[in-house]
Structures are given as structure tokens and as C-alpha cells.
Amino acid sequence: MCGIVAYIGHREAFDIVVKGLKRLEYRGYDSAGVALMNGDLRIYKSQGKVSDLEAISEGKDKSGSTGMGHTRWATHGAPNNENAHPHLSQSGDISIIHNGIIENYVTLKEGLIQRGHSFISDTDTEVLVHLIEDIMEHSKLSFVDAVRSALKQVVGAYAIVILSKNHPEHLIAARKGSPLVVGIGEERGEYFFASDATPIVEYTKKVIYLKDNEIAIVENQEMIIKNIENVVQAPYIQELELNLEQLEKGGYPHFMLKEIYEQPKSIFDSFRGRFNSATSEFHMRSIEEYGDKLKDIKRLILLGCGTSWHAGLVAEYLFEDFARLPVEVEYASEFRYRNPVLYSDDLVLAISQSGETADTLAAMDLAKRKSATVFGVCNVVGSSIPRLSDAGAYTHAGPEIGVASTKAFTSQVTVLTLLALGIARLRGTMNIKAIASVMRELEQIPEKVEKALKLNDEIIVLSEKYKNAQNFLFLGRGYNFPVALEGALKLKEISYIHAEGYPAAEMKHGPIALIDENMPVVVVATNSEHYEKVVSNIQEVKARKGIVIALVTEGNTSLNDLVDHVLEVPETIEYLSPLVNTIPLQLLSYHIAVMRDCNVDQPRNLAKSVTVE
Ligand code: AGP
Image (cartoon, rainbow, N blue to C red; front, side):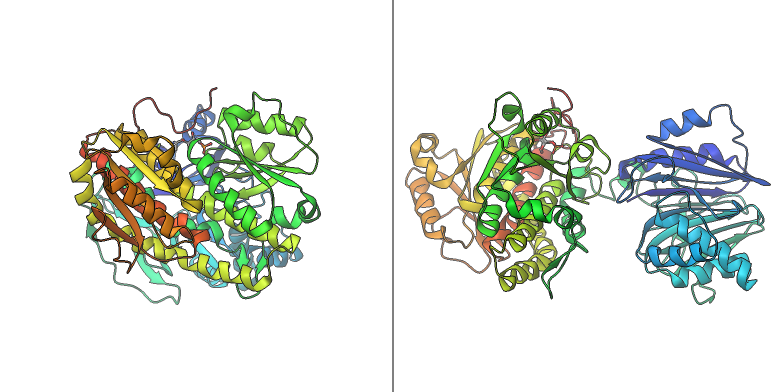
């Protein structure tokens, strides 16, 4: 997701726009740009942070009481100067900034090229501003009507602001599927536009949240709002109540909680457009381009650190079950210092949210030097790990600001599930119906995660009860052994309570000595082939007066008399159960940490990306 800011009024626009872009930095950025107008139209843009944009603007003409700016979170297309917004029309007279995806941009672009247009970037946004100008030239429509006509041809989502050198008295903004807020300035003719209210709130509390298919038109200091059919809309002006910090977190008290609640969407975004459950076809470039290689690989080596390593452990079960591949899951920090035996028919797959983890990068480099094919699954477009990878897939989870990884984990598992299914299809190790069945269940997961999030209130009660425990044990079997590890990591890294994750069966080989009436034991006991054995493990804990918090499949009341607390999670197939079962464990660690007054988003001693050894 990108961030857009615009201003028109009596003040100098540059400082307002740049300060606003900094307010939107939590949305992520890999390039930034501004357009300024006072008679002429000047554009400054650069790869990197908003501070880099300020640096390149130094000493240049930054005058103008009309302006707009953009921070780009690349979802496709490298983060570089050419792809940075704002973009210009063929003549350079019209400029646009855009947040969203124009799905039919290739078709539109082909038509424009046939009509003599040439393009500088490979973005969908540049196509839209060329289309607007093309319509004005060929249809003699007004600037505003040409924008409306162009938007009616767009398939996809947009929040846009458009300026024209030939119409300096105009500023046009529109939205469909991406948020756009209008701030009503104190002075006549003063308006602010932004992806959310954070860049606006310090200037005015009066805002209008544009609705889908609405267009805001500022002309000669007056603003009207029309719908895409040119019908004037009665704007609903609201008074902002949240303060700036709350606004950046979308109203949540912490980024981590916001990101936990984003998971229905982030999981959907991780698989959107990548498969067709009706035909069980895949649309993943790494599978298409490396199909022959993937058919012949003899072994898969998964590399990662921390939570990403846990995602690899889930993937081990998936690739074994679906693609019948031997799998090794390696701590990247260990792998990089070994002298591993690798072959050219090995596939090494690095998993990383940040794409900058030093140990993972070094392990990848070692694998490449030993002639293995190296893939990457990463969340940050254009980061080092994708650049070092031969191929791979982005998780599209959106920026993850909280140091404790939550939505990145479930997005990693989602993408790894798709890769495992795709390779299974290539290798013929899974029949088409079985693949389609998993795909159809995966399509249900966002809704099931939404339902699992409703455990929040029950988990707050549990957190209050156990927030002062000195130790926790997390147990799981099979696909949910990595879930136990992830639950333990979440708790220890943000609440500073010592917690260990273990395969449930492994408890009797030592950890059972730790069990007493002060030890909460979280057991993932959802429906699976191991369920009865997990129940036996629960009985072993209870026999030693341990406290058991059991995750069970909704409707299963058979453990209610045996355990101390039951959390019922939506049922899904075992392959996909980590996506649902992890949710209550994230909420448990979050609430306990908050109750212990820990710094949830920036836990002590930790960094979001460990770029050092
Ligand atoms: C997870 O909550 C931690 N923040 C940490 O273990 C993290 O997963 C690890 O440092 C790997 O980071 P990466 O995914 O960016 O490579």
C-alpha cells in the first residue's frame, strides 16, 4: 500500500506535503515524490525515503500553493526513480499520484501505444494519466470529464490526485477501493487530501471520507463532490476524534495488534490472483519460469531465522505431504557456518519478512556458491534477499511495523502452501482434485481467521490470569509443532516471560520435569490425526497439576472437564491449521505483554530486521 498527500490553498504546499508523507511512512516506502504548481508544474522524486526526497529537492524551486506527494510501497515493479510517483502524461502537462492497482493497465497501455504514446515507467499509474490526456485530445471533453471518462475504463482500485499545468485552478481527487480522506481547511479554498487522516489532523479536524466512485473537484477555491456518473453528492463532514498517534495505528493501540487484525486481508492478498480453485491452475511466475527445474529437484532446503524459520518448519510438512520432496529446515545462522553438501538439483528457499536478515543472506550466498538454485519468499519488494534469489514470491502482507512478526508469518505460510501445491502439480505427486480441494479451503481461511480473532475477549481474561507466570510451555504435534514454537517465541519476545515450544510427545523426554501448578501449558489440540495422542499428553500434564490451556476445534467439548481453559478455533484441514491456530497465540502474547507494561511494538534488545551477524 502506498501513501498519497495533496494540498491546495493559501499556504506553501511543499512543507505540508513532505511532512504529510512522513506521517504516512508507517505505510512503508521505497520511493517518494512531489509535484508542485504555481503556473508551472515541477516534479521531484527519488528512490528511498522521504528524507532522500527532501535532499534532492534542496536548493530547487519548491514554491507553489498547490502540490501533491506520494510514498510508494512497491507491489510490483522495482522501486526506482522511473517507477516513483508522480507520473506525467505524454505532453507533461498533467500529473498524477495513485494508490491502488489498475488491473487492466496492460490493455489500456497497448491502445495508447497504438495511438502514439510512449512510456517511461512500467507502472499502471502512468497509463492512467496518459489515458486522461488522450481522452481530452480526442474527445474534446473538459479536464474533469476526461478524468471521469478515464476512470470509467479502469478495472481495479485507485485513490488518485491529479494536477494539470493547463488548469492550475483545479485539483481533482478520486477513489475506488483505496482510501482517500479530504480535509476542509479553516480558510476558504483550503483543502487537504491524504490516504488517511494522519497528514491532515494537525491542520483541521473536519474531514470527508470519500466513498468509492466519488470524485472531489476543487476549482477556483470551491470544492464539489460528484460520483462517477457526474451526479453531485452531498458530502458528510466528520469531526476527527483520534489523535495523531492513534491514527497512524488505524485506531489500534499498537501496530502489533493492528497487524494481527490485518491477517484476514493479508492472507487474502498473499494468495489473491495466484491460483484458480475451479481449474486448480497456478499463476506464480517462479513456478512457471522454473517449472522444468522444479520437476527435477531432489531436495528442498529451507532457510530462515526466528519466525521465518518457524514458517519453514510448517512448510516442511507441506512439501513432504504435497510434493513428496525430502526437506531440510535450517537455521540460516547455523547453515552459513557449516560446510553443507549441496547439489545442483537442490532447491534452497530462503524465507524472510524484511529481506535483509544478515544470516539468511549469508546462507543464501553460500548456497549459490555451491551451485544450488535459490528461491526467496519475502515481504519487502526490492530488498536484498529477492535481489539475490533466482526466483521466488512476495508475501504481499504490507508493511509489518511491529517487531514481533504476526501477519508476515501467516503470509509466509500461505505463500509456501501455494509453492508446495504448485510444485506438487508440476511433479504429479498430488491429484488435481486434491489440489483444488486445498485451494478451496485456503479461500475460506481469511473468514476463519476473522472468526478466530473473535476469541480476543476470552484471551484477555486468560491473559489477566496468567500474566505473572514465570514460565510457559507450548505443545503441539505435526503441523502444529511449529505453531507451538511460534507461540512461545511471540510470548517471550514481547512479554519477557520465559516460554518454550515443544513437540507434545517430546515433553516426556525432559520438560515434564518442569510441570507444576505454576506452569501454564498451552496445547494445540485441534482435530488432527494426532488428536488422541495430544489428549494423552494433556493428561500427563494434568496428572502433575499443570495448568492446561487447550486450543480445540470449535464444537469439541470433550476436554472441557479435563483442562483449565478451552479456546475453540474454527475448523480447517490440518494442512492449513497453522494459519488459524496461530491467531489466539498471537493475541495471548500481545495481551499479556500489554498487561505487563512491555513495549509491545519495540521490545527491549530487539530490532525489526537483524541486519548484523
Ligand atoms: C519474530 O517475531 C522476530 N521479530 C524475529 O525472530 C524475526 O522473525 C527474525 O529476525 C527473522 O526476520 P526476517 O523474517 O525479516 O528475516
